[in-house]
Amino acid sequence: MKRNKTNKIPIIKNFLNRQKTSFVLLVCVLIAASITYIIYGYTQNLLRERLRERLTAIVSTASIQFDPDNINAVWIREDAEKPEFKAIVDKLWNFREANKNIRFAYIMRRTDDPNMFEFVADAESLISFEEADFNANGVIDPDEELPMPGDPFDVTEYPVLRDEAFFAPIAERELYEDQWGVTMSGYAPIFDDNGEAIAIIGIDVMVGDYMSVTQATFIPFVLFILFLVFLLTLLTILLVRIYQERVEAMREIDRQKDELLSIVSHQLATPISAVKWNLEMMADGDMGKLTKDQEEHLKTIQPQTENLADLASMILDVSRIQLGRMKVDRTDLDVAQFAEDVFNEVEPKAKEKGVKYVKSISKDIPKMMLDKRLSRMAMENLLTNAVKYTPKGGEVELKVEVRDKYLFYEVKDTGCGIPKKDHDKVFGKLFRASNVLDVNGNGFGLYVAKGAVEGQGGKIWFESKENKGTSFFVMLPIVN
Image 1 (cartoon, rainbow, N blue to C red):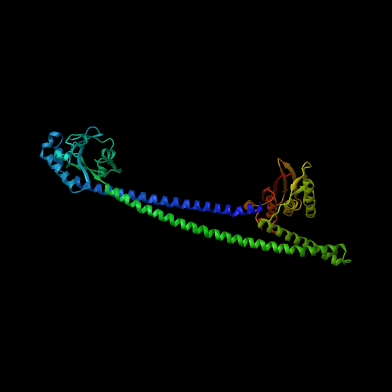
Image 2 (tube, helix red, strand yellow):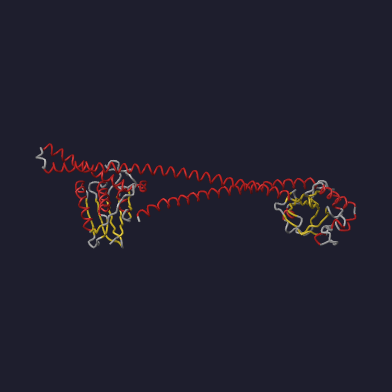
């Protein structure tokens, strides 16, 4: 079963890497598509504005070619017989014929109703019956009737024509599509000798060419976005691969480092233990009676040897956590007695430092299946740290109880506390709080404690205020 779980890990990592790659690629594609859409929209608007400018120039030029007196002479249908009307129509016709894209050219004036204009003339007002019968059905249909002087025209749906055309040359902002095709309309006022706008000239231009150009620009944009997607795909795959290779290389270096650390610490443990035993034998007199000076030197050497043994053991535990070799060996453990034993082991250090050392261990804690070594490692490190960072006259308290289905214990001190800026680094390797540089320590204790707790499925956290103290909390699931 363990081997199967191990084999699943690379599969899960590969799946997550593919998910990350897909997400990054999707984001890149969306960005590329958005940029392309914006550029395409900008190009469309730019072409439309150029078309409006061109149409505005055309109607502006056309408006000054008409005689105001001729326009003032044409009001009703009967005026269609006047030479002035014929002169107006001829100019409109010639103007339309000069530009193949112009579909309609006409002149209108205002009425008392602001939403109703009336025709003065149209370029097609004088064409023959056959020319007017556009669908060649032998009848002039309603939509084929030619505008004549005085014919009304509702401008309610043409706000530009109604509100702006009598003041300055202007082109519609929107395109219109009818049975003739897609058109854009432009208007310009015709002024009399007094500078008063007596009518407007309107020109409807077929913009099929504009639509063709716009659609033609869409193809390069589509090709462009496809190229960007392809390029981004290659770059994303390349960058992810490079990143993964770097990560794997760093992991391998880290693994080799931890492997070396494990070997070194394991090899150091044996000679350090031998030195420690021999020193104890010397202290017990097994190697003969020692002189007073020798005893003094021995008392100095023994604590240093113990510290060295603890350090080697700590390094070995760190390497096991790093390499994922933290073996959990659960045994039936009397937790209350276990906590008493660990508490008592650290008590001499508290007395030596002058720290008040108290405990509150519940008596109704059931026996639990725990790894004694890992549990000792966590609790002892927390108690040792609490004593170490609490000044003389301070207090360290161990509280052990059962909460719901968890073993809960708290190690509380009134020491120097942990600065808020360091809170997210507390359980890291080699971490030392920025306010305790004068206290000896190797920075492994809390890292090992965390590994020992989490290795048993538990949780560890803390609360701390600088210069007020720290409380570490541990919860371990009860396994019977």
